[in-house]
Image (cartoon, rainbow, N blue to C red; front, side, top):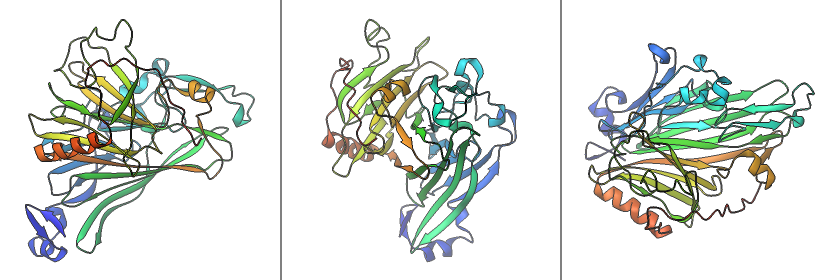
Length: 392
């Protein structure tokens, strides 16, 4: 049974009340047709609960818009959802990625995340190619997917809306990594389920790094909004040292939009529950609205908090990652870089949840605090203790 409009309904009940499910919920394919977004295929999901989100087929099947009952959750930057054909990967010394950076979720990888880096290319056995040059956060987020399917699937009296596709990051004498992504949501719910598999289809031993840049905007992000996470240690802050308190913005509670704000990035060590799940949330108590992200500690052992509180770009980032924030060279030095042989893969299972109302926020906060209490002070001293990542 599903819950729609305050009633428990069977499949028959729904069918009696409308000629098509699309009157209440569904998933449909459309194309954006203006400005820098022109030509991008987009899937729109509506669950009938007030949750609406869009998936950009031509941008790695990333989630762009997200709203609940007309209230925005996902962040829109000034760049718009730029068509990948306009993207200049090598531009601005590797920072041109910032001209295509927008939406609730931007995928980072598949062989590189974090800041620009030139890496030895000898594992690709091609003498003219001495290095692999990577921009900030890698290539995958601006690669179009091959859409393998989408639609509605009934399981008894529950209806699942879904899409699936393949994003292929490949080069001759280079990597051949495939991201197989599936997104599901149930009619009548406020939950998005994301399942990714990254597979090495090539025959070179290939590095793999992965991160989700999950960007929450206003009105979930507002003056007084709270960051909730099962933090056992604040490991690192980009602005630590003499700059730590200069902007007077700690990790826990958010201010209103600021002028001339410089981004702040924190890495937190997060605990998992008994099933290995790690929930993190941003909540607006005054509005009774929040957004929760749950990932798995064995898949994403690291987590960053990104504060971009600049006026006109106002966003809070929840960033689960395969690696520490110090980047690829640090990962290689410590033996923590993932290497995939032919046919090997890594899987990532995540859940995004709208927290609608004070009770939902309270349940999320209780769940998180039962795993671990976070520091009470706004500016905890970073420990610098980047714990070893096993299983690589």
